Length: 344
Image (cartoon, rainbow, N blue to C red):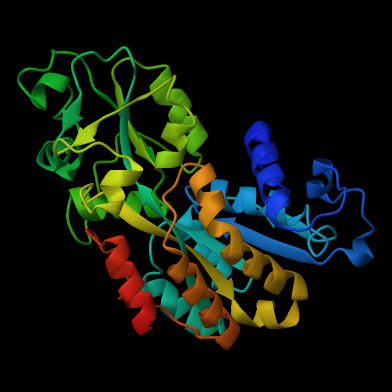
């Protein structure tokens, strides 16, 4: 299994879940499944969003501490939401992590390939703008200022902090952000630049959020964006900016104050895989039953328990398709997401 380095966090989460879920004595090394015979290890292929990756990674670690999950072999990677959907809609993976709803083009690709999918919201995120702790001048930024900085016309033109706000120093500004295959990039571009638009391209881009964390942490002139979990796990290296004077945190997301940067996170499940592979079915059931506490432990905002219960019903009944219109939906609140799921 391909994992990022979060051993201590995963160990703590596995211990937490084991207190609620009966589990045998299984070493955390079993997560690689290299010590199990191939004939007895059904494989679950998971790809997609690096933002959702920490949640699914932690769920996988906890799942493999249980009796039903101890023999399951999971191949967990991240290539970005869009990159993951390319594989998912080609039938190459069982589950796609997604930091935005499936797009119209991806729906069509899945339909043409005969891939029927179940859409399952699993948490809420506060997309976070960060700077280096040595940045003493910026405590907040507005959406309009972000547009000035990130719109295509800014490429090669907006080069200093002072061009964003006159009170900022005349220092170079270096940009870091999610790669173009990332759902986080799609959402950011939708919110900041406008529907169907893209940002300037002269920035350091990566599907690996840990590389973005490292970039900003080592660059006093940097500003970057990624999911809240990566900020929370690196608060000693980063400083989060308030957006329109509202800070990213659980309370502001739950109260619909951190707009438009609060957004739902998803997993998409190939329904045929779930029918034909018991390991996929057991994993998804485990995910929904434990998603609330695990998403909170890794730094995201859990959904109401009702949302996970609705997801279990949708999955059990094989309710395939999407409750969205094939595009990111800024300013969506947790309550509105729940109503969407109830009506689906």
